[in-house]
Length: 249
Image (cartoon, rainbow, N blue to C red):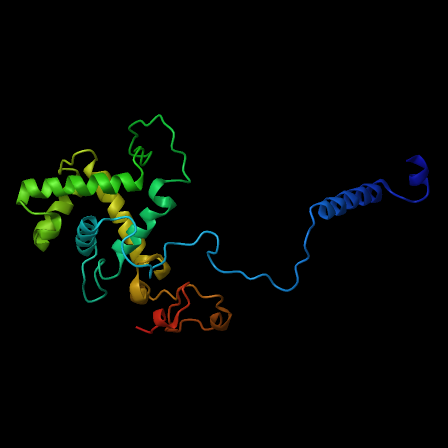
């Protein structure tokens, strides 16, 4: 090695040459292929969402879906600004999320011990979202039958609001699950569905984006940088990219 270094070959060059030789040899032994052109790329190709237009319910039974739609309809009631949570597709959004990895908390650490946390520690429940909805909806049905002799979906708007308020403040005793935990789970998912990209099932026709003036999933805004204090009235765009979802409200 001393002779090579003396002839002008640096140690860095020698190491680089050796590494290149190893890499070429490994590629040859693996029968590496040469790619020509631009590889095709499709959004969500390897980890796609449960798409909005896939038919039927993916997690909920028909009975569960009816109750969830009744809940989201009251959590976000229709008014002069937008349609209800039900008509915006919030129940569909929740159903698709529960059918995927979110439903089982597959990406979270799920080993115990599970202890009751302080208010500042947040959610410490051992139940994943699928379990929360299954237990919560069954317990809610029993509660409403005991109180009104009807399921939640059969109650009047005033009665539904009364039940939801009892869940929120914890005065409604549910079997197998804390009422506050169930309420917070459904409320959080409902809000997510209302404002999420339509590709996930909610925010149909981008109703919430049009309501708040959010332009959606646009590639860049260079054409608008210099337009200060001007109302742009940009048509919101979805990841879906279909003109059917890009109507100006």
